[in-house]
Image (cartoon, rainbow, N blue to C red; front, top):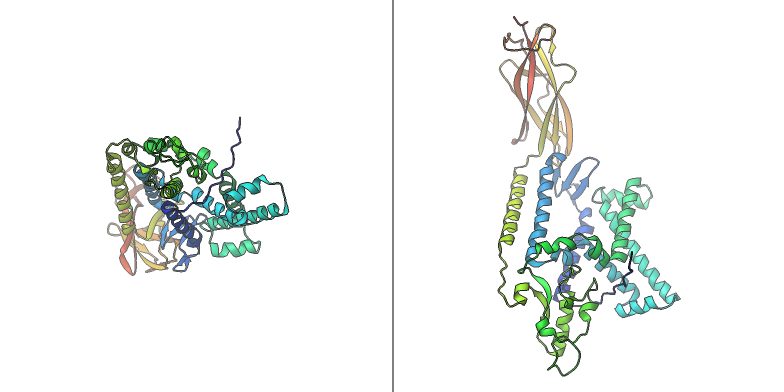
Length: 459
């Protein structure tokens, strides 16, 4: 039912691909851990405020009505995955996946506490002693501290981190904040500390469907059997290939596979085996590239075509989506208006014979500053707004309910009307409310509604 797998002890290796991975990891970690602490215009630069249903993204404020932007961004992310996978394999897995990045951090902390690969293997195989207990305890201290800080940072994207951290330290944080900090801290601890390659091999669905996005022109990590076989050590290389069977490519692999057996779905394309093999080839005086990024066609001696139809289609769709998002953001108004009619009465007849309809305008100011707005009415002659202030002040990032009353004279009978009520026949007139910023008339929203009035009794 279950086969326990041997623990993988990845060996440290240096080289151009590993330097690239380290730089990518540093950039991603800095973005994750530093971004919540950056403020713009007095507010957190990146905050997903779920209780208020607002997303603050670098000075822009998104509301549930802006769901189209979220859908477009998700499409861009999905197509980016298809595009880069078709072009160069599992770049996401090897260089940008959170599981990969945090696993590398946990491995680095483990090396600080327990030593290099050989020392870690020896320590795990040795009986318990004060030295082993001290090393394991130090490692757990590093892991737990880093995992809890990660959980707190993640929650800091949803709850203002400058108040979240003091509340956690002073034990005043809410129950949900404490739960999610613990949950994501535990998830980081378990996934990056213990599961590691098991997540990539058994839990991640990407490893299962990536093959559908590969073709013979996709760049993948490849072992050249024509050069490498027959493998084996020894000074007399006449009867042997370039591979000396040092197994360093296996020792440095974070998922513990042997790339010489061919491409496998457990390969995350990190390039560690390329760096290790190139170092060995340089030492034995053989050409580099026994293991290299290449394509199936290139390995078979066939021409490789990078710009093929699927790559062009993915790229064109990506450019189109990004352009649409950019145009949408440029044209996006920091104002939303909704009009609600009074539900208690269709209309009111005043003592002087005038007809009155009441409305509630929901004015949303999405900008970072308080703003004054002017409400105007577009309607047939005889209808007007009464008892209204010349301007409406709406605080930043908030919605204001503003009552509006529209009055007009009793209208003439309309023989085509129906639905009599108390001897009067309602008549509907289309009207529209326009709301614009007092300091910038280009910020304008209009919303249509209806004005109802009775006519004389139908003949």
